[in-house]
Image (cartoon, rainbow, N blue to C red; front, side):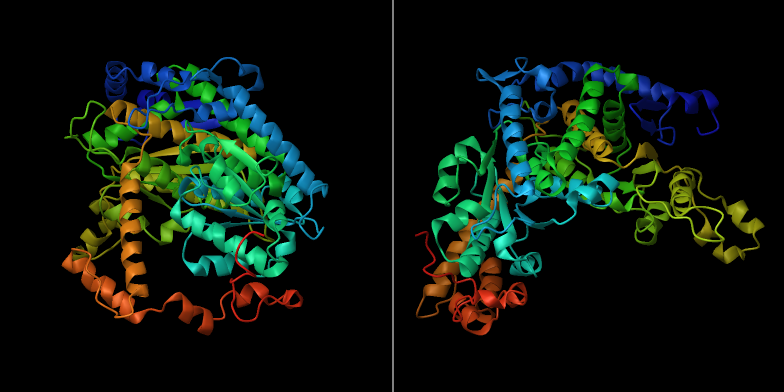
Length: 572
């Protein structure tokens, strides 16, 4: 197929600096015609339009799906409504407040409880409340404008309920200069709220439990429906609460306050706005470009082709840019949580393959990790993502090529190696003994697409985010599934609550009776854990918890008897 010039010259699409080459997919021009017919049969255009109009396409939760409204232009106020509310006007009300607040923090007009300037931000969240913002943070951390904007500030993410994550996050931070941003749509996510209470206790340990400690050091990004819970936590809901809406799914929320607040605090609102404009550029392309020239639509249709027709159950994202090291994890959640479903919208159990396993790693690291499997093991379609210019290129003395040229040589070589392979006759011609020929032969015919952008900036990061969000939606629309709920996640949460009840009973039982969960296997392993672990009172008396976080702040003299115990442990 790669020797057909007409085919190869037709299999690309371009928009606003984004160049997609899909000529190395296992598809002919006839295949593309058939995929376009499939899109028409599945009313892809109608489903896309219904989404951006604000229809409640997330029918299992009776919600609209309007992440595109988060980056709409201000001139689009008055165009999109949900339950009679102008959503774009709501978005700009929040963005204007985010801009005012983050500028005031960065200028020193708003300070912490003791009057010190805020210089450290800890964003507490999990899943979409963490993966998307961290992906963007890593993009901007080495971008020249981002470097300059972030001077004097730090941003850390606390996502895992593992106490080690708390220890690592808080290490060497001065609480008097730290702002905690709690990101939870419902303000009930178990892991996030435990970490939030832990960080609140950390603040109390250093500065006492005056209610203004929380009011001046804790910010909430949550749904309007969680306002009472935010207030009950002690947060100033007038000035330190930034809302988002039920029509924003967690994995689609990086353009909302969930991303706007921490990113703007570190890099300034203006840089975050450039990210929004990049996402908006692809949104407009997605809505207006003919499907044969539409980058997210083509990627989505090819995803359906690879998964449902060619039966490739996994795919990988391979960004040849170290600053995109968190993009594969974000895509992983975005796609697998969206399209890992078992029933169609009509309630019929799916009898065709849907929902790939997504993974990835930055090149060239991935080449020395799992590319052996890509070349010789099972077939895994690949997305190669590269940039014409590096954020920071290097030219070493006596080296003919720059470091970025070296990186990009791999970016261009790997897709061809996967597609063409290496025939047995080529191996023999190299003088390899016959018994080793099979071990050094590559069959090739392994599909990939290549995406090339000018340079990794905030704008380009927004473009990439939007491309992958819409690719996910396209595949769900074609498969006729709801890509916007996540009941599998909810089941795990419910079972965790049940297990916590058993742990509470075990910890408080003076007779130390065995736990009985009703499942012999679960009871056995849970009892093993209880018998070999410690209760809170034992941990407090033996474990110097948070000693790392305090090593540079001994002058605060926290209560000596209990780390993270606070004064009275309550709001005064």
